[in-house]
Image (cartoon, rainbow, N blue to C red):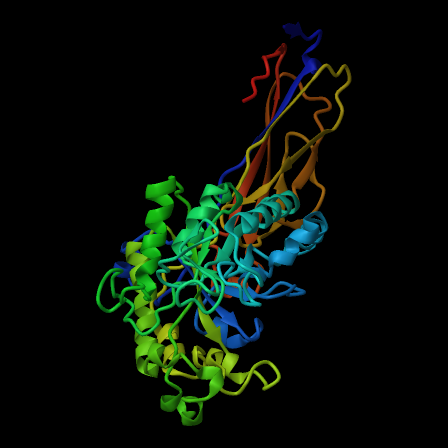
Length: 484
């Protein structure tokens, strides 16, 4: 169907032409050779006792994990862990309502959400019941749907799977499953590889943006390869994540990133002034995993370097942990193993601070919408808007520096805003004859302080053009709607 307008006022089109903006991290500590290794893809982060600890930024890290609402904008990219367990299924819809509200109200503070923690374990911090990958997948998919509805820009990460090693048993039809009374099993847990397979068979791949995994190093060096004697028969080593990636891609065709939402090495308490903890019940069974403080530092640096150079599919890597050694006794016992994964005040903190980093720069662009107006007998002020679109999970702000529009009145509605607010404007075409008229909005985009101290605007000013075209005739085509 074609409709021909009866006057040239019925063909009034405003073209919004945006010139893309770019940002890049400026870091004198990154050598050209380090940058040449790979395109930036890693996130450098920690699991901290306090997300406001200034030591995180002092190391040059750009991610942190939180375990509740941060309450305000933190100076890092933020991953929030939401704990889930078997009981979450009792009222999944109500839980989804809560999560959706959390995601909506905290959209300006949180870049990514991790749904659960080590659900292949029956521990209280895991599934708190015999693990069931299909049940966890139901929770994950509900979370994904709710978070994306509230904040489409958020990254949803599945719960970091615990490395349990190879389990040679089958229980209730589940492969790689330990259960009391089965073989040598002390409790309920599932081989992380078999749990992953059951997750993907249940449809989990459509419910996460990145797969969470916990590639702890145990006693193996960071560069030890899966299947090597250093990793042992259970592949207890950092690079066991390569097998997880192979399962995703080769067996299920899932080509999505993996995030190491926890990883690290356990320090020998005898080498950090705590010999009484070696045989303490809260440290029991961990002795075979320990490394020296210097090895902890070396392995953590090597882990980041290996991932940067060899794993383009790896996203954020969050060291476990930063500051847990300072936790008061009511958090956990003085000899609890979590205190000895801590890197704060140990050689690892300085080594990670001095390590060259290939961080993902903040990236964004202005969209270029087209607004078509027709069938208006009397010219009226036209409404339009530019939108700032982030290509990384950083928050951005924009400000209008000046307006230059000698051909027609052009007025922005606001002088500043965030990436969640459109830069809307009014253009008045009254009195314009057939022709092309141009107005310019000069804008600046920035990452809010204190993020901007480490992520700099490469070219801070850009011109967004509003082009007004007045022509004598317009034809409108009504095309069929095709849906898949």
